[in-house]
Length: 361
Image 1: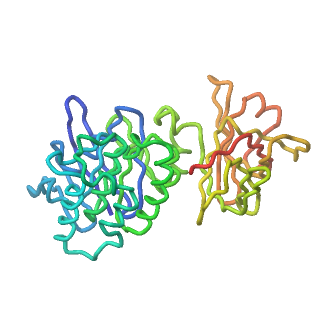
Image 2: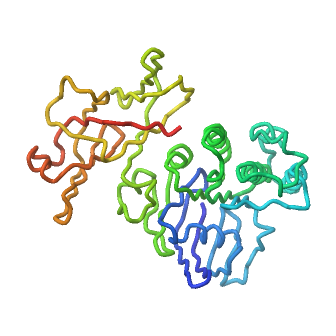
Image 3: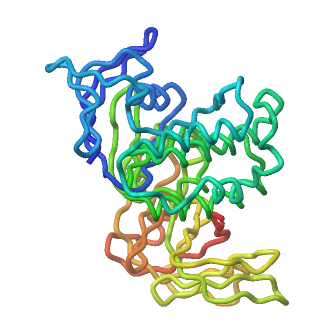
């Protein structure tokens, strides 16, 4: 368990956090710019003046009441910032070896990933002899990620680690990071504005507003429980559903998935390679509702659902309808006029017509 009971100031900004987080898996740290996401990571890392309590499983890194303050260099953590810093007086290989030597000093079971594995996975071989000052932003991020992982941390702090990596490289790295996070029972705090990274890498989320915790829980619960104004534009107006990959139609270039014995189709240019549950994002505005099963429609995705909740306010022409499809749920953003004309009520069985479903891969 990661216990945070801390107060930290950075300039005129005050961070006041009181929460407990899971000791395994990636936790998305969400919120608008200026909400305190980076400040939270810096406080945990001991980079900003902080008082209170920070405990990572059995280790106490901060306990102000007992004058316990573990310096950053002795906190078993890996940190990758928005602008990763490498040792400029060492080449890439030496930077990685430094982290590997640190890992070897730690009295814990050996990691499944060796330094050579990480070099291969992150395609760092051509960069090993280069000085960090000659690397691009994406290359620097790749090296920083590998260095953080090879150090075998008890806590991983990632502040938009893939933001400087191009889309194709990101698609290559995300599945590997999934494997790393699945294999390692350590907590990860993952700051991001990218919905793909939230969907693929994180199981839980914490949302900050003005330096305080606004929400904490599973991704679905958090996204459904807070106002859109508390999330960045990239993570609003959407829901994530977990599906199972079934097949790919080469002639039509369509990938078929199932969600609780119902089918959902996503256009793709080439066959995907998936294992286990596959997250798919559905934007609220791309969902229409029918009370009878439609026929002769161009929309490929039609799901039988039950209405869980209807939210509408007099100051907006739109309302949000929360729909349940088996174990998954998502939202439809439709006009209040449509809600009244269709006489939509909670527990009513309806059909959701999904104009576009996006694969978070």
